[in-house]
Each structure stands twice: as C-alpha cells, then as structure tokens.
Image 1 (cartoon, rainbow, N blue to C red):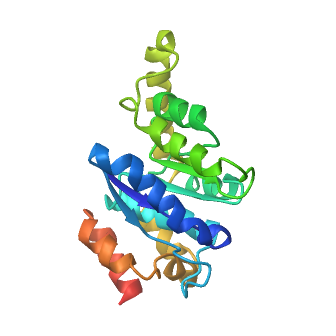
Image 2 (cartoon, helix red, strand yellow; image 1 turned 180 degrees about the horizontal axis):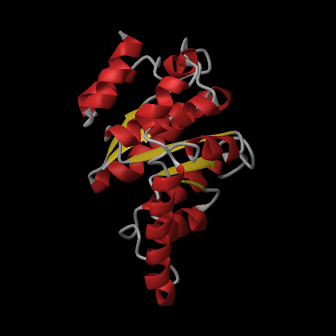
Length: 212
C-alpha cells in the first residue's frame, strides 16, 4: 500500500515525529510512506487544511496513493476538506478504537487526526496505537461481526452516492482558484513523489501544467 502523509501549516512542526511513528508501524507490514510535507513550519510551500483536501484528492484519484494520513489542530477541518472531493472518504480518528472501527465499518481511504487538541503526555503513544489499529485486520470486514453484512452493504451504498453527488475531479480542479491548487502541489518533494507514482495520465497532464 502507498501511504501519503500530509501535514498542514499549523502542525507542520510535528511532521518528523508523525512520519517516524507511521513508518515504524507500516514498513514492517510491507507498506511504503510518501511524505508530502509540510516538513517544517518554515517551509516555503505553506499548506492550509483546505489545500490538504485538494492534495489528498489529487493523490487518491490519480492512484499516486492508496491511503492518506493527514490532520490539523482538531482534525475536523482536514476531514471536512478531504470529504469535499470525489474519490475521498475520510474519517475523523482520535483514538485506536476510531481507527479500527473506521477501517471495518467505513472502509475509507483517508484519515484526519487531531495533532494539537489533546496532544499531551502519551500523545506519541496514542499516535502509534492508532496506526497499529489501522492494519490489524483487512479493511471492510464490518463491525461488530454480527453487523458485517449490512455494514459492508452500507459502505458500498455510500460510495455509489458519492459518485452521483460529486463531479469528476478534472472538472473540479480547473474551476477552483488556480493559485489555491498550485499551492497545494508546491511542496518541496511533490513532483518527485507524485509523478513517480501517478497512474492517471489525464491528472498527471493537468498537474504538469501547474508545476512546470
């Protein structure tokens, strides 16, 4: 699995810790982490939580990532921004139970974490345990087990609803403020990471027009 890590500007100082914790958990399982920043609070490319949503949508819809790990101070803004776009199903995850239930019930492709609220003693342990619970079982199994069949059915229904209620991403991106979109893909390592992993030629072509 290709896992993209995205931090917005208010919590950029924690990127190194989050990346190290995520890699510690997922790399032994055979997954790969691609860190799209922000890397420090002083990065030239400053991402807002709205731009996190744009970037997450680009990565997931293009196939450059299978899962996005992101967040903001409370996690709420990043979650709302991500869910504004087609092809993104983002859960708000505060603790390991949230993580497990999201994978089993909702079977989404992005999670938004609070990186400031409740960030006290043991925060790094909670972060590790959250990442661990994301991968203890195959996603989409349903929870509780006696509810597995209806939960799986509901998750599929929601995906079909989102196909109707959202336009294609390549209709949306050109209609947005192009400076906003350019800022979302202006990260120091974006071009190297994205174009090496993108599976959609049309999205790649559009993005090249922004970053070249």
